[in-house]
Image 1 (cartoon, rainbow, N blue to C red):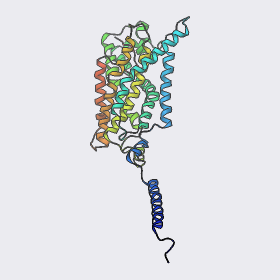
Image 2: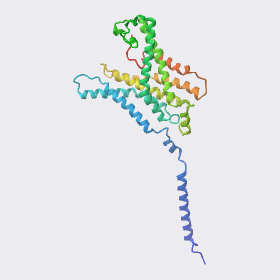
Image 3: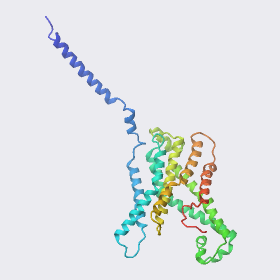
Image 4: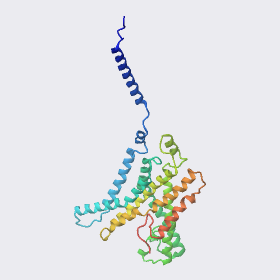
Length: 334
């Protein structure tokens, strides 16, 4: 007698069961299959902004907004609408000064070479913390340099002490009726703008870069490589140093744009703000230091500290000869 499972109907039933089992196996394989490359790229931590990075960017933006509000020239009886209009103009000028630096960073940054969160950290820390410290250190170093020049060329200026504090003396000679010689004024300007300020600013860029844990031999950099973050390359050094340089530049441009509050022709202040962001002195000085450190740490060449600091310092000194002011200075002695 024929089996109940025999016949054409039984064959169709067996095929349906086999197809269902194959579909279950395929679904199980898809669950455990590694994601495709484009899916991994979407989940790459080097491409995603963390909550901390968003907070740092918001803090930087709020600082610019508060400074823009406080920098509006106030006069008696000024309507609030006019004050708010001046505040919006200040914000616009600060934004204009950041257009070219933002485009520069977007052109240089590459996620397979640098973590976007570390870029944000270096930029915000340079803007919020690095620039005020740089301002104080550079002012102290320039004061010491100017006192040395006065002691050499104008020792009679110290007769104003103790009525005028010695640390305050180099900056208030004219206010107290003392006319220093043209040679002394020129030498003080050259020393502070072409020697002290370039060396201090370049050293600060390198220091802030080193604190970011980017160096190839740094413990945090090794941890990042083990955790799947981008490996340290020559371009990594350039991107991170550019973030440091742009943080200092953004803070300096914000200060100078907001200090430019006197009367000016139409759109002169907007042009000034845009051109402040266009000249790439900070970026070039940082890039020179980054390339030297990358040759030392990534390529294994012997590079001294002087070779790291001096090229950028010399470039900034040349800019100082052309009229670029140190971070702490607005006006001129001459």
